[in-house]
Length: 143
Image 1 (cartoon, rainbow, N blue to C red):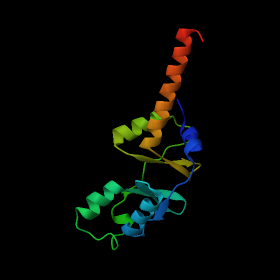
Image 2: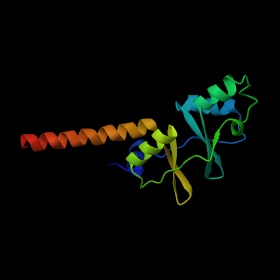
Image 3: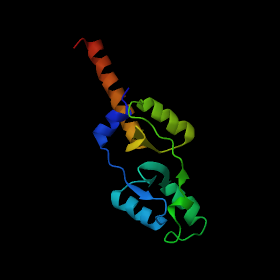
Image 4: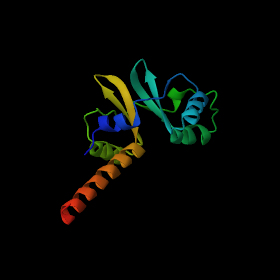
């Protein structure tokens, strides 16, 4: 099974983030520009939270708030669960499934080094399964 480090090596280490005092509007602008569904909220170099499109829909739109006047800190999920680069993709899938997360920040030595999404995890699982299938086909056919 692949590790988080292998996933990051394939997809890249870019992390798009905002400060907790930024407006929701600015965070949404960044998310639209980068075509991402969540943005990490940082304080210094440490993850403080995550703001997702779901947070926006439920905590701004449905609450009839204004995105230009609402700070990210008011709607973000605080203290995100972080994973380490040596953790398996399977571990991440378990965390994401049981806690219903779609994004996991990756830290090493208390420093943020990346973020993985449920899409990254699914892609890695499919890749591993495809490899296993190919190996079994070669074993069965003797090639």
